[in-house]
Length: 67
Image (cartoon, rainbow, N blue to C red):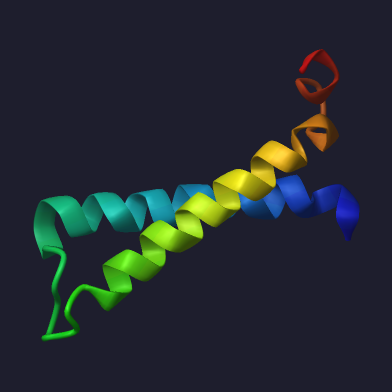
């Protein structure tokens, strides 16, 4: 649904932002010998969802028409 792409990207940023913060504060980058794979996947997905949100910024209600 093209009109809700911004919502999915925003939710992804929120969830993965929390995951990245937890990795950096409590968990550590490497967990159970995974060589940091989970952390790097979270960072990669965070960056990609930020790009998607940037591309669909005009579809965001209320603030999209001012951008």
